[in-house]
Image (cartoon, rainbow, N blue to C red):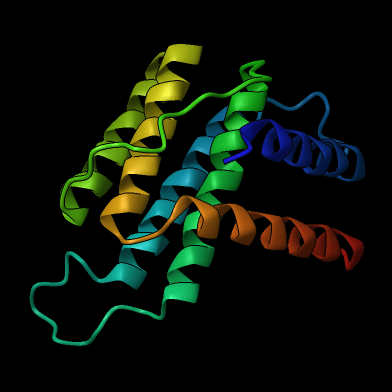
Length: 161
């Protein structure tokens, strides 16, 4: 995954939102963390991996992919707030079963909330990529879906979203 390109695209979107909503003096880190937690919850809901009481199948892959990419947007945005301009991540990460992978992501979000460091960011990114593997998403699918969603996010800003 070309994280440098994705970071540049995310920074462009973030800067646009900051400008258009006059948020340059706002501390948005905790809001972005909460937004990420909500997006991870929405993703879990679409995978239905924790719904042992239900036989309803998981959502279509494209829906799950879109929810996953929403999380990537917020993770990259958090990295930008931490001053990260380069990201290297091992794309051949071990996987775990989905419920455990979701729990590890939530834990990594909490760690980043407590310790706003580059190291904590990288752990979160790694756990989120492991989650992708656990829910059967490929790196190529994620990157393409990110690019598509980034365009949609700009269109939404054009429409006063």
